[in-house]
Length: 457
Image (cartoon, rainbow, N blue to C red; front, side, top):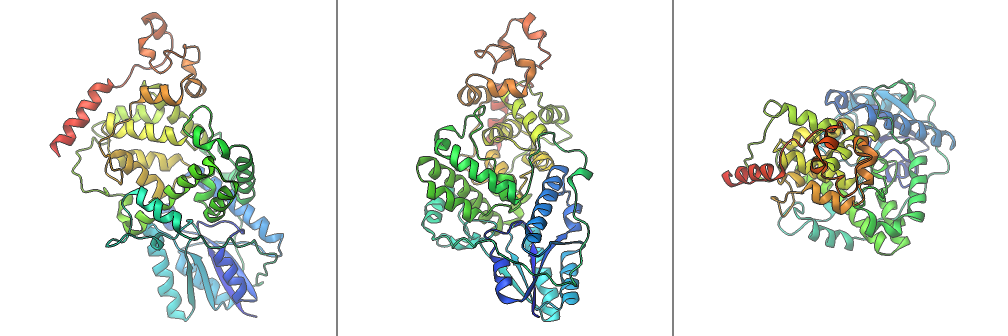
Protein backbone atom coordinates (compact mmCIF):
# COMPACT_ATOMS: atom_id res chain seq x y z
CA UNK A 1 0.00 0.00 0.00
CA UNK A 2 1.41 3.38 -0.98
CA UNK A 3 0.88 6.35 1.35
CA UNK A 4 0.96 10.12 0.85
CA UNK A 5 0.62 12.91 3.40
CA UNK A 6 -1.45 16.05 2.82
CA UNK A 7 -0.40 18.92 5.09
CA UNK A 8 -3.37 21.23 5.63
CA UNK A 9 -2.47 24.83 6.49
CA UNK A 10 -4.69 27.69 5.29
CA UNK A 11 -6.80 25.37 3.15
CA UNK A 12 -9.20 23.67 5.56
CA UNK A 13 -11.68 22.21 3.09
CA UNK A 14 -12.36 19.20 0.89
CA UNK A 15 -13.93 20.96 -2.10
CA UNK A 16 -11.43 22.29 -4.65
CA UNK A 17 -8.32 21.05 -2.88
CA UNK A 18 -5.58 20.30 -5.45
CA UNK A 19 -3.04 18.93 -2.92
CA UNK A 20 -5.56 16.39 -1.62
CA UNK A 21 -6.62 15.44 -5.11
CA UNK A 22 -3.00 14.90 -6.18
CA UNK A 23 -2.26 12.81 -3.10
CA UNK A 24 -5.31 10.62 -3.66
CA UNK A 25 -4.26 10.09 -7.27
CA UNK A 26 -0.72 9.16 -6.28
CA UNK A 27 -1.29 6.82 -3.32
CA UNK A 28 -3.61 4.11 -2.01
CA UNK A 29 -3.91 5.81 1.40
CA UNK A 30 -3.61 9.43 2.47
CA UNK A 31 -2.87 11.05 5.83
CA UNK A 32 -4.81 14.35 6.12
CA UNK A 33 -2.55 16.14 8.62
CA UNK A 34 -2.85 19.44 10.47
CA UNK A 35 0.02 20.56 12.69
CA UNK A 36 -0.48 22.89 15.64
CA UNK A 37 2.66 24.91 15.07
CA UNK A 38 4.23 26.40 18.24
CA UNK A 39 5.73 29.16 16.05
CA UNK A 40 2.19 30.49 15.52
CA UNK A 41 1.71 30.73 19.27
CA UNK A 42 5.14 32.32 19.77
CA UNK A 43 4.24 35.00 17.24
CA UNK A 44 0.97 35.71 19.07
CA UNK A 45 -1.05 34.85 16.00
CA UNK A 46 -3.33 32.35 17.74
CA UNK A 47 -5.64 35.06 19.10
CA UNK A 48 -8.84 33.77 20.74
CA UNK A 49 -11.25 34.60 17.91
CA UNK A 50 -9.12 32.93 15.26
CA UNK A 51 -8.38 29.97 17.54
CA UNK A 52 -12.13 29.42 17.99
CA UNK A 53 -12.82 29.69 14.27
CA UNK A 54 -9.90 27.34 13.58
CA UNK A 55 -11.33 24.81 16.04
CA UNK A 56 -14.64 24.92 14.15
CA UNK A 57 -12.83 24.47 10.83
CA UNK A 58 -10.87 21.46 12.04
CA UNK A 59 -13.94 19.83 13.58
CA UNK A 60 -15.90 20.34 10.38
CA UNK A 61 -13.04 19.05 8.23
CA UNK A 62 -12.73 15.95 10.40
CA UNK A 63 -16.47 15.34 10.13
CA UNK A 64 -16.37 15.65 6.34
CA UNK A 65 -13.45 13.23 6.14
CA UNK A 66 -15.18 10.72 8.41
CA UNK A 67 -18.25 10.74 6.18
CA UNK A 68 -15.87 9.62 3.42
CA UNK A 69 -14.22 6.91 5.47
CA UNK A 70 -11.27 9.00 6.64
CA UNK A 71 -10.36 11.31 9.52
CA UNK A 72 -8.21 14.31 10.26
CA UNK A 73 -4.91 13.74 12.07
CA UNK A 74 -3.98 16.67 14.35
CA UNK A 75 -0.61 16.87 16.07
CA UNK A 76 1.38 19.56 17.82
CA UNK A 77 5.02 20.49 17.36
CA UNK A 78 7.48 22.02 14.87
CA UNK A 79 6.03 21.38 11.43
CA UNK A 80 9.05 19.75 9.80
CA UNK A 81 9.60 17.42 12.76
CA UNK A 82 5.96 16.36 12.96
CA UNK A 83 5.58 15.75 9.23
CA UNK A 84 8.78 13.69 9.10
CA UNK A 85 7.61 11.64 12.05
CA UNK A 86 4.28 10.91 10.36
CA UNK A 87 6.09 10.05 7.12
CA UNK A 88 8.23 7.53 8.99
CA UNK A 89 5.36 6.01 10.97
CA UNK A 90 3.15 5.58 7.92
CA UNK A 91 5.93 4.86 5.40
CA UNK A 92 4.75 7.70 3.20
CA UNK A 93 6.61 8.38 -0.04
CA UNK A 94 5.45 11.96 -0.71
CA UNK A 95 3.96 15.03 0.95
CA UNK A 96 1.58 17.56 -0.62
CA UNK A 97 0.78 21.07 0.60
CA UNK A 98 -0.44 24.46 -0.60
CA UNK A 99 2.01 27.27 -1.27
CA UNK A 100 1.96 30.18 1.19
CA UNK A 101 3.09 33.79 0.84
CA UNK A 102 4.17 35.05 4.26
CA UNK A 103 7.71 34.98 5.61
CA UNK A 104 6.58 32.30 8.06
CA UNK A 105 5.14 30.20 5.21
CA UNK A 106 8.35 30.51 3.20
CA UNK A 107 10.45 29.41 6.18
CA UNK A 108 8.08 26.54 6.97
CA UNK A 109 8.22 25.25 3.40
CA UNK A 110 12.02 25.46 3.19
CA UNK A 111 12.55 23.70 6.52
CA UNK A 112 10.11 20.99 5.52
CA UNK A 113 11.74 20.54 2.12
CA UNK A 114 15.21 20.28 3.67
CA UNK A 115 14.01 17.74 6.24
CA UNK A 116 12.17 15.61 3.69
CA UNK A 117 15.03 15.74 1.20
CA UNK A 118 17.33 14.33 3.86
CA UNK A 119 15.05 11.31 4.13
CA UNK A 120 14.41 10.96 0.41
CA UNK A 121 10.73 11.98 0.56
CA UNK A 122 9.29 14.21 -2.16
CA UNK A 123 7.51 17.48 -1.29
CA UNK A 124 4.94 18.76 -3.78
CA UNK A 125 3.84 22.40 -3.27
CA UNK A 126 0.67 23.44 -5.11
CA UNK A 127 -0.12 26.98 -6.30
CA UNK A 128 -3.48 28.79 -6.47
CA UNK A 129 -4.96 26.99 -3.49
CA UNK A 130 -5.24 29.92 -1.08
CA UNK A 131 -5.52 32.53 -3.87
CA UNK A 132 -7.50 32.58 -7.10
CA UNK A 133 -4.35 33.28 -9.14
CA UNK A 134 -0.94 32.21 -7.87
CA UNK A 135 1.20 35.16 -6.70
CA UNK A 136 3.94 34.63 -9.29
CA UNK A 137 1.62 33.88 -12.21
CA UNK A 138 1.03 37.55 -13.07
CA UNK A 139 4.06 39.84 -13.13
CA UNK A 140 4.88 43.09 -14.96
CA UNK A 141 7.88 43.50 -17.24
CA UNK A 142 11.01 44.16 -15.22
CA UNK A 143 9.56 43.46 -11.78
CA UNK A 144 8.60 40.49 -9.64
CA UNK A 145 5.18 41.87 -8.63
CA UNK A 146 2.64 44.58 -9.37
CA UNK A 147 2.83 47.60 -7.07
CA UNK A 148 -0.39 49.21 -8.39
CA UNK A 149 -3.75 47.46 -8.28
CA UNK A 150 -5.45 48.59 -11.52
CA UNK A 151 -2.88 47.17 -13.98
CA UNK A 152 -2.72 44.04 -11.83
CA UNK A 153 -6.50 43.67 -12.02
CA UNK A 154 -6.40 43.96 -15.82
CA UNK A 155 -3.81 41.18 -16.12
CA UNK A 156 -5.41 39.09 -13.39
CA UNK A 157 -8.77 39.25 -15.19
CA UNK A 158 -7.16 37.80 -18.35
CA UNK A 159 -5.89 34.70 -16.56
CA UNK A 160 -7.64 31.45 -17.29
CA UNK A 161 -8.51 30.00 -13.88
CA UNK A 162 -7.75 26.37 -13.22
CA UNK A 163 -10.64 23.92 -13.02
CA UNK A 164 -12.40 23.55 -9.68
CA UNK A 165 -11.71 20.13 -8.16
CA UNK A 166 -14.67 18.17 -6.77
CA UNK A 167 -14.56 16.93 -3.20
CA UNK A 168 -13.34 13.32 -2.98
CA UNK A 169 -15.89 10.57 -2.57
CA UNK A 170 -13.66 8.46 -0.34
CA UNK A 171 -10.50 8.95 1.69
CA UNK A 172 -8.63 6.00 3.14
CA UNK A 173 -6.30 6.78 6.06
CA UNK A 174 -3.63 4.32 7.26
CA UNK A 175 -4.22 2.84 10.70
CA UNK A 176 -0.74 3.92 11.80
CA UNK A 177 -1.69 7.61 11.53
CA UNK A 178 -2.53 8.65 15.08
CA UNK A 179 -3.47 12.12 16.23
CA UNK A 180 -4.45 14.21 19.22
CA UNK A 181 -7.89 15.33 20.33
CA UNK A 182 -9.35 18.05 18.15
CA UNK A 183 -9.38 21.57 19.61
CA UNK A 184 -12.72 22.74 21.00
CA UNK A 185 -14.10 26.27 20.80
CA UNK A 186 -15.89 25.68 24.10
CA UNK A 187 -12.57 25.49 25.93
CA UNK A 188 -11.53 29.00 24.87
CA UNK A 189 -12.16 32.30 26.65
CA UNK A 190 -12.01 35.92 25.59
CA UNK A 191 -14.08 35.43 22.45
CA UNK A 192 -16.10 38.16 20.76
CA UNK A 193 -19.79 37.54 21.58
CA UNK A 194 -20.90 37.76 17.95
CA UNK A 195 -18.21 35.50 16.50
CA UNK A 196 -19.59 33.42 13.59
CA UNK A 197 -19.29 29.65 13.26
CA UNK A 198 -16.32 28.42 11.26
CA UNK A 199 -15.85 25.53 8.89
CA UNK A 200 -16.36 24.59 5.25
CA UNK A 201 -19.99 23.60 5.79
CA UNK A 202 -20.89 26.99 7.26
CA UNK A 203 -18.82 28.80 4.61
CA UNK A 204 -20.44 27.04 1.69
CA UNK A 205 -23.90 27.66 3.11
CA UNK A 206 -23.12 31.37 3.50
CA UNK A 207 -21.70 31.55 -0.02
CA UNK A 208 -24.82 29.95 -1.49
CA UNK A 209 -27.20 32.20 0.46
CA UNK A 210 -25.31 35.36 -0.33
CA UNK A 211 -24.88 34.76 -4.05
CA UNK A 212 -28.61 34.07 -4.35
CA UNK A 213 -29.87 36.94 -2.23
CA UNK A 214 -27.31 39.75 -2.15
CA UNK A 215 -24.69 39.49 -4.89
CA UNK A 216 -26.80 41.37 -7.45
CA UNK A 217 -26.92 44.44 -5.20
CA UNK A 218 -23.26 44.35 -4.17
CA UNK A 219 -22.02 47.02 -6.57
CA UNK A 220 -24.37 49.66 -5.18
CA UNK A 221 -24.59 48.47 -1.60
CA UNK A 222 -21.17 47.25 -0.46
CA UNK A 223 -20.23 50.60 1.13
CA UNK A 224 -23.55 50.96 2.97
CA UNK A 225 -22.50 50.53 6.59
CA UNK A 226 -25.97 49.93 7.99
CA UNK A 227 -27.09 47.80 5.04
CA UNK A 228 -24.33 45.28 5.74
CA UNK A 229 -24.40 44.06 2.14
CA UNK A 230 -20.89 42.64 2.13
CA UNK A 231 -20.46 38.88 1.82
CA UNK A 232 -18.75 38.26 5.20
CA UNK A 233 -16.85 35.47 3.47
CA UNK A 234 -13.42 36.79 4.48
CA UNK A 235 -12.97 34.49 7.53
CA UNK A 236 -13.75 31.44 5.41
CA UNK A 237 -11.32 32.57 2.73
CA UNK A 238 -8.66 33.31 5.33
CA UNK A 239 -8.80 29.78 6.74
CA UNK A 240 -9.29 28.24 3.32
CA UNK A 241 -12.70 26.84 4.25
CA UNK A 242 -13.74 28.28 0.90
CA UNK A 243 -11.75 28.17 -2.33
CA UNK A 244 -11.18 31.62 -3.89
CA UNK A 245 -11.14 29.92 -7.29
CA UNK A 246 -14.61 28.51 -6.70
CA UNK A 247 -15.87 31.77 -5.18
CA UNK A 248 -14.82 33.69 -8.30
CA UNK A 249 -16.28 31.02 -10.56
CA UNK A 250 -19.65 31.06 -8.82
CA UNK A 251 -19.83 34.85 -8.81
CA UNK A 252 -19.03 35.06 -12.51
CA UNK A 253 -21.61 32.39 -13.25
CA UNK A 254 -24.18 34.63 -11.62
CA UNK A 255 -23.03 37.58 -13.74
CA UNK A 256 -23.98 41.24 -13.62
CA UNK A 257 -22.43 44.36 -12.12
CA UNK A 258 -22.62 43.04 -8.59
CA UNK A 259 -20.61 39.98 -9.54
CA UNK A 260 -17.91 42.02 -11.26
CA UNK A 261 -17.62 44.40 -8.32
CA UNK A 262 -17.32 41.45 -5.94
CA UNK A 263 -14.73 39.66 -8.08
CA UNK A 264 -12.70 42.87 -8.06
CA UNK A 265 -12.60 42.67 -4.26
CA UNK A 266 -11.40 39.07 -4.42
CA UNK A 267 -8.69 40.32 -6.77
CA UNK A 268 -7.61 42.86 -4.11
CA UNK A 269 -6.98 39.89 -1.84
CA UNK A 270 -4.80 38.24 -4.50
CA UNK A 271 -3.04 41.55 -5.14
CA UNK A 272 -1.94 41.82 -1.52
CA UNK A 273 -0.82 38.19 -1.49
CA UNK A 274 1.42 38.73 -4.50
CA UNK A 275 2.91 41.86 -2.91
CA UNK A 276 3.67 40.02 0.33
CA UNK A 277 5.03 37.00 -1.50
CA UNK A 278 7.57 39.26 -3.22
CA UNK A 279 8.18 41.49 -0.20
CA UNK A 280 7.67 39.42 2.98
CA UNK A 281 9.15 42.18 5.15
CA UNK A 282 6.17 44.40 4.26
CA UNK A 283 4.36 42.73 7.16
CA UNK A 284 6.45 44.85 9.55
CA UNK A 285 8.32 47.43 7.44
CA UNK A 286 7.05 50.27 5.27
CA UNK A 287 6.48 49.08 1.71
CA UNK A 288 7.35 52.57 0.43
CA UNK A 289 10.55 54.14 1.70
CA UNK A 290 9.10 56.94 3.80
CA UNK A 291 10.49 58.54 6.92
CA UNK A 292 7.35 59.09 8.97
CA UNK A 293 7.87 60.15 12.55
CA UNK A 294 4.82 58.31 13.84
CA UNK A 295 3.52 58.79 17.34
CA UNK A 296 4.12 55.63 19.39
CA UNK A 297 2.41 53.89 22.33
CA UNK A 298 4.43 56.10 24.68
CA UNK A 299 3.61 59.32 22.79
CA UNK A 300 -0.11 58.73 22.34
CA UNK A 301 -1.19 56.18 24.96
CA UNK A 302 -4.49 57.89 25.87
CA UNK A 303 -5.47 58.49 22.23
CA UNK A 304 -4.68 54.89 21.30
CA UNK A 305 -6.71 53.56 24.22
CA UNK A 306 -9.68 55.73 23.26
CA UNK A 307 -9.44 54.49 19.66
CA UNK A 308 -9.29 50.83 20.74
CA UNK A 309 -12.30 51.27 23.03
CA UNK A 310 -14.41 53.14 20.47
CA UNK A 311 -14.42 56.40 22.42
CA UNK A 312 -12.77 58.85 20.03
CA UNK A 313 -15.78 61.16 19.91
CA UNK A 314 -16.25 60.48 16.18
CA UNK A 315 -19.32 58.24 15.97
CA UNK A 316 -18.63 56.28 12.80
CA UNK A 317 -15.09 55.45 13.94
CA UNK A 318 -16.34 54.39 17.37
CA UNK A 319 -19.13 52.29 15.84
CA UNK A 320 -16.60 50.43 13.70
CA UNK A 321 -14.28 49.77 16.63
CA UNK A 322 -17.13 48.49 18.80
CA UNK A 323 -18.34 46.22 16.00
CA UNK A 324 -14.84 44.78 15.85
CA UNK A 325 -14.80 44.04 19.55
CA UNK A 326 -18.28 42.44 19.49
CA UNK A 327 -18.09 40.42 16.27
CA UNK A 328 -14.38 39.89 15.62
CA UNK A 329 -15.15 41.42 12.23
CA UNK A 330 -15.61 44.90 10.83
CA UNK A 331 -17.29 46.29 7.73
CA UNK A 332 -14.68 47.11 5.08
CA UNK A 333 -15.64 50.79 4.94
CA UNK A 334 -15.35 50.89 8.73
CA UNK A 335 -11.84 49.41 8.49
CA UNK A 336 -10.78 52.19 6.16
CA UNK A 337 -12.22 54.89 8.40
CA UNK A 338 -10.79 53.46 11.63
CA UNK A 339 -7.35 53.05 10.06
CA UNK A 340 -7.33 56.51 8.48
CA UNK A 341 -8.35 58.11 11.75
CA UNK A 342 -5.57 56.39 13.70
CA UNK A 343 -2.77 56.92 11.20
CA UNK A 344 -3.61 60.29 9.70
CA UNK A 345 -5.83 62.15 12.15
CA UNK A 346 -4.07 60.90 15.29
CA UNK A 347 -0.79 60.26 13.40
CA UNK A 348 -0.10 56.96 15.16
CA UNK A 349 2.15 54.25 13.71
CA UNK A 350 0.14 51.91 11.46
CA UNK A 351 1.74 48.86 13.09
CA UNK A 352 -0.05 49.67 16.38
CA UNK A 353 -3.40 49.58 14.62
CA UNK A 354 -2.51 46.48 12.64
CA UNK A 355 -1.60 44.61 15.83
CA UNK A 356 -4.91 45.52 17.46
CA UNK A 357 -6.85 44.36 14.41
CA UNK A 358 -4.92 41.09 14.35
CA UNK A 359 -5.74 40.55 18.01
CA UNK A 360 -9.49 40.64 17.31
CA UNK A 361 -10.16 39.96 13.63
CA UNK A 362 -11.32 36.43 12.89
CA UNK A 363 -10.18 37.05 9.29
CA UNK A 364 -6.87 38.51 10.52
CA UNK A 365 -4.62 37.83 7.57
CA UNK A 366 -1.01 39.03 7.38
CA UNK A 367 -1.21 39.87 3.68
CA UNK A 368 -4.53 41.70 3.75
CA UNK A 369 -4.40 43.21 7.22
CA UNK A 370 -0.85 44.58 7.08
CA UNK A 371 -0.98 45.76 3.49
CA UNK A 372 -4.43 47.34 3.83
CA UNK A 373 -3.11 49.22 6.87
CA UNK A 374 -0.12 50.35 4.83
CA UNK A 375 -2.41 51.36 1.97
CA UNK A 376 -4.41 53.61 4.29
CA UNK A 377 -1.35 54.94 6.12
CA UNK A 378 0.26 56.04 2.85
CA UNK A 379 3.26 53.73 3.22
CA UNK A 380 1.86 51.04 0.96
CA UNK A 381 0.55 50.71 -2.59
CA UNK A 382 -1.96 53.59 -2.59
CA UNK A 383 -1.19 55.92 -5.49
CA UNK A 384 -2.55 58.81 -3.40
CA UNK A 385 -0.62 58.30 -0.16
CA UNK A 386 -1.65 61.64 1.35
CA UNK A 387 -5.41 61.11 1.14
CA UNK A 388 -7.21 61.56 4.48
CA UNK A 389 -10.73 60.21 5.05
CA UNK A 390 -12.93 62.66 6.93
CA UNK A 391 -15.04 60.58 9.37
CA UNK A 392 -17.91 63.08 9.42
CA UNK A 393 -18.24 63.27 5.64
CA UNK A 394 -17.76 59.54 5.31
CA UNK A 395 -20.39 58.89 7.97
CA UNK A 396 -22.91 61.15 6.25
CA UNK A 397 -22.20 59.46 2.92
CA UNK A 398 -22.15 55.79 3.98
CA UNK A 399 -24.47 55.92 7.01
CA UNK A 400 -26.81 58.80 6.11
CA UNK A 401 -29.55 57.94 8.61
CA UNK A 402 -27.11 57.06 11.38
CA UNK A 403 -28.47 53.50 11.69
CA UNK A 404 -24.99 51.95 11.84
CA UNK A 405 -23.86 54.41 14.51
CA UNK A 406 -26.97 53.84 16.61
CA UNK A 407 -26.53 50.08 16.38
CA UNK A 408 -23.06 50.17 17.90
CA UNK A 409 -23.01 53.42 19.88
CA UNK A 410 -26.17 53.24 22.01
CA UNK A 411 -25.30 56.52 23.73
CA UNK A 412 -26.43 58.19 20.49
CA UNK A 413 -29.57 56.13 19.85
CA UNK A 414 -31.89 59.09 20.42
CA UNK A 415 -29.86 61.70 18.54
CA UNK A 416 -31.52 63.05 15.41
CA UNK A 417 -29.97 61.81 12.17
CA UNK A 418 -28.98 65.36 11.25
CA UNK A 419 -26.51 65.45 14.14
CA UNK A 420 -25.77 61.80 14.89
CA UNK A 421 -22.40 62.11 13.14
CA UNK A 422 -21.67 65.44 14.86
CA UNK A 423 -23.05 65.16 18.40
CA UNK A 424 -20.78 67.98 19.62
CA UNK A 425 -23.13 70.36 17.79
CA UNK A 426 -26.02 69.47 20.11
CA UNK A 427 -27.09 72.01 22.73
CA UNK A 428 -24.82 71.72 25.75
CA UNK A 429 -27.44 70.32 28.10
CA UNK A 430 -28.36 67.55 25.62
CA UNK A 431 -24.73 66.80 24.86
CA UNK A 432 -23.78 66.49 28.52
CA UNK A 433 -26.49 63.91 29.15
CA UNK A 434 -25.35 61.48 26.47
CA UNK A 435 -22.38 59.99 28.27
CA UNK A 436 -20.47 60.18 25.00
CA UNK A 437 -16.99 61.74 24.83
CA UNK A 438 -16.04 64.94 23.07
CA UNK A 439 -13.78 64.53 20.01
CA UNK A 440 -10.18 63.62 20.83
CA UNK A 441 -8.94 66.18 18.35
CA UNK A 442 -10.35 68.72 15.94
CA UNK A 443 -10.20 67.27 12.42
CA UNK A 444 -8.57 70.41 11.05
CA UNK A 445 -5.84 70.21 13.70
CA UNK A 446 -5.20 66.55 12.93
CA UNK A 447 -5.01 67.26 9.19
CA UNK A 448 -2.61 70.15 9.75
CA UNK A 449 -0.32 67.97 11.88
CA UNK A 450 -0.34 65.22 9.26
CA UNK A 451 0.48 67.67 6.48
CA UNK A 452 3.31 69.24 8.51
CA UNK A 453 4.77 65.81 9.14
CA UNK A 454 4.63 64.89 5.47
CA UNK A 455 6.12 68.24 4.45
CA UNK A 456 9.12 67.45 6.69
CA UNK A 457 9.63 64.25 4.78
